Image 1 (cartoon, helix red, strand yellow):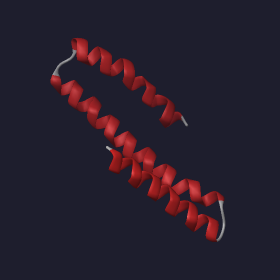
Image 2 (tube, helix red, strand yellow; image 1 turned 135 degrees about the vertical axis):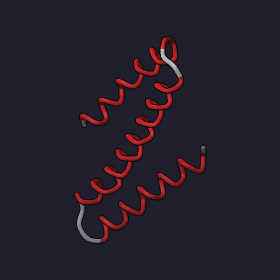
Image 3 (spheres, helix red, strand yellow; image 1 turned 90 degrees about the vertical axis):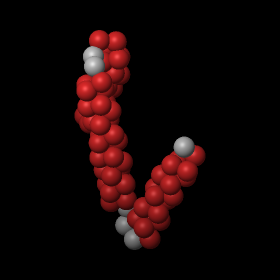
Image 4 (cartoon, helix red, strand yellow; image 1 turned 90 degrees about the horizontal axis):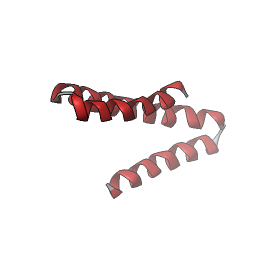
Amino acid sequence: MIAILSRFLFIPAFYFCAKYGDKGWMILLTSLLGVSNGYLTVCVLTVAPKGYKGPEQNALGNLLVLCLYVVYLQE
């Protein structure tokens, strides 16, 4: 939960970097945003099915992967 909420700090960081910073800071912020996005996605995909047992666990894992795939296809 802290990792998700801390991503809101990227909003003012990107604003001040775009206004006052140079390209190096923007590259660093973009890289950190991408890494945190990947990390949080993996956390959700691995933790969410653990709350279920049996066939529901497998079905939920498959549903999460399908939803992630559909979202990436729309981009």
